[in-house]
Length: 496
Image (cartoon, rainbow, N blue to C red):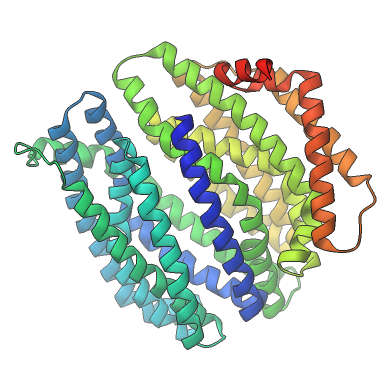
């Protein structure tokens, strides 16, 4: 797991760096208001993608991992075929709906008639992207991480290049930017999907033809998840549209509200979640690992893996939260030249620990076949999010959004962690949390008390160096590394 996690992380960090550079370019090209409009267009396409995927990726990962753990190659191929057949039906239906509803959505919902072409192009992207996600689940479940990583990396590089070229042809408005983003993704994803499918057919056994029983298993696993995903996605896209609406009700004009929405979604959150590359790589690998342990009834192994991952997540999350809090103003000034983004990033930075841990816990619950519980919690908190936004956002503006964001994510994390304790047999402890928080607080204090030059790049380098030095010293003195690292890495730390 560690080896594959490091591989995925290295590729993901490189691609996220490229994506962040592109985000900076896009913000400078179309402005914060344009970024906000593009985010709304992509929210609609993402909602349709969730409907089209219909739980097939998780079903593919779970079923292929179980068959792979039992060394049943024919069973793996049957599971993949059943998942591909299922997702083709659902994704084509979602694509048709998006294509024919594009005129209404662009005029009545987005209030941007020119967005119709972007939405219709997104309809063409849906089937290709859904098939690619299912194939990605298959490669992850069967341990073919290197092959998947190489193809994904090539796809993202090609996608960014094509999008950049299309942006030169589509103008400087939000509609053109949305069309370029979706068009580049469509072309690159089509090529990557063809390559992944060709790889999946290699070494296929003769007795690997799909059967009715496998298709039934896919439906039983995917349909409940698809229904909850659809409801949650609907609530999420409603939330996205409620933010600029609520900010306008709080007193901002339409342009200022869209600019504030674009600042949060297009500048703050990308910077906030950029370091999560390591976490999401680990989550993708934990799902098949935990599914295999569960299929083999290895309860001790389940408890060990979940406890180690929780402690490692605490260490990484607290370090990242402290570092982002320290560097927020200089970082956003360097990237986006936006003081507002710096203030908001510093406000959201302490929540990183909770956000990262929540994502990690949700991933482990999926590996334990607790998708239904995860879906219930996510749906509940998404509904709570919409209700609270309707209440607080028109009255309190951005402060109301921050309060609602923290409250709903805290509730989701508490429910998910409780379920993991019951299902995985792990026993979270309070001492590692206190130690990691203490280290992060000491490092923040040391870095923020240091005088720095006015140049943003020099200030970032100096503060980051001080933060790392103080955090490392604090971690060694308090024994944080001893309690939060896996046993093998603890031994290596002692030796050094």
